[in-house]
Length: 270
Image 1 (cartoon, rainbow, N blue to C red):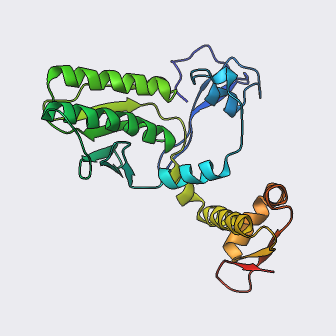
Image 2: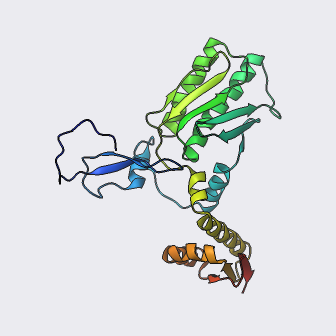
Image 3: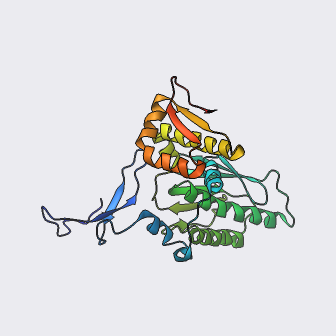
């Protein structure tokens, strides 16, 4: 916790704090002093608050959309709306985005085509940073040619994307003379890949539950059994109540979970 010198604190004094950045690989969580009463905030409320129109948003469950978002957030490459690929690599210092124009059809001058794909790439870069829970520095290798007007426009596109994705405290620079565009986002959530690596058994359990849900959807009269290895079985036991409730709600009791007699996980009909 970062405090000013002294700050008027005395031994035994109570202090309310809030987490402003979750712990991630090699980094501790960061907290700040808060004037809010204990347990007065919910994470969902804090997440919705900066979203444009967030107060009017309604909550709905879209299982296929959630699954697609998880798959996308783990993909090393993303296809842009009008064609072309955005390749994503994370290093210890920053996240790098490389733009590939292969397969993209465009009209107009070289400058107009470059600006079109760069605009899409900048918006998608920021969306992917938000989707993956990443912060810190990110760099996009833009497509040339870029004149001053195009560079300034891409900076404005980034600022609009920050607002659309409800990212507060972010910064964007116009692309450099070498075509590199830098953005900086405050750390907030633990990146998705860090969470998955920290809990591999839980990730395996989620994958199995998703696969079983697909089976029951494809065959609405069949009953299925998920057999779990020892490590995944322990992950299930830690979340048994909520897992069983979710299975009962989504599959009407047609999916049961049991420990496996081996080291492999499998789904089979009962």
